[in-house]
Image: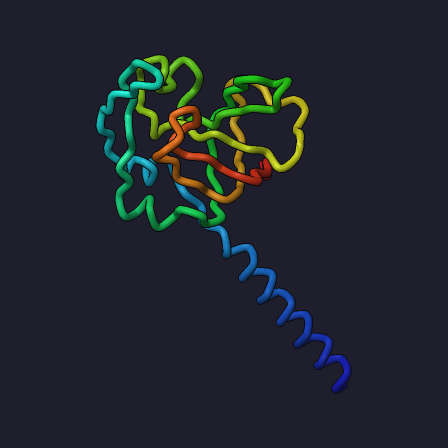
Amino acid sequence: MKKGFVLLMLSVIGLIGFNQTVKAQTVITWEVLKDIEFQEVWSEEFNAVYMVPKFGSKVKSLDGKKVQIRGYVIPVDVLADYYVLSANPYSSCFFCGQAGPESVMEIQLAKQYDGLRMDQIITVQGRLRLNADDILQLTYILEDAEVIE
């Protein structure tokens, strides 16, 4: 009887630990990522104006955290395994005029996924990095990203 009770308790403790691990990531929405403003700045290097993000407190609190988000796939360079996740389908994404830079996220995949296609809806998880300095990367970057759905 005692042995059965001990095994039951160890199982419950294991489940509690598993639930805490699952809860360690934050499910975010594109609405949360709108807590941002942009300022136009001239770049001598590129001889062009670019947008510098000023992150709000909600977004700043997510920097470096493991998050999960759902969106539309935009394959930028399949051979280089470079993909972008968008709040909107390709025809409505920010560079097509229907949204802003806060509506897309660079996803740096931890492993290669075959078959990711334009406008496929996926859920990914990874570590969110806010980018205000490198104009060659997007404002939001999901590092070590994994497709979970």
